[in-house]
Image (cartoon, rainbow, N blue to C red; front, side, top):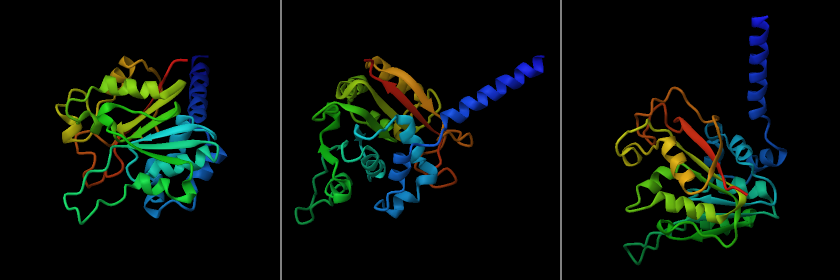
Length: 253
């Protein structure tokens, strides 16, 4: 009898796991398959698992999504296609650094290039000093940031609870803040600047202090082979394959 109960529990757990990793919606699959995406992006899909990430975040057509510190725009393009023509994507980053040589203006920022691309006409580029917090024209359904939270911690004199509160204020009631980053071991000194990682518990503590409710995590990017002691950007077997956490925080309705 006991063995049957254990078997039933195992089957139930397996069913729950399968449900958690159900096939992404067709509009997400189509967004990832977008032919206009650069080859450098699509080559990273196996490691970054974009379809699973959007499904976990709850991205849907018609939504307003903020890609916070979008870098090269890997997720910006995918969000654009997933939310569709009735949705909006705000690519929000710091102002470009001024050129030291007036004869050589800085290259265009990727988020500006994407916003000017007719393939992604629903993308709006916003440059603001992020030390002052997040600000967008309208409240969003989702604020997403990937592999950036640890870098924000390195900004001089930044108050991360106040920063997270600005994210909170930029969301609609019921909206979500998704934080994806490289896992650090607890109590590692200066880990955000030395290893470019962060302890997930630190992120959760700060987000909850800003008013968010923890609403789950995805293990899709978990890598047990990573002992969290190497620099996240270092060359080697963990390059682009670090152990990463993906936390979902919700603004209460």
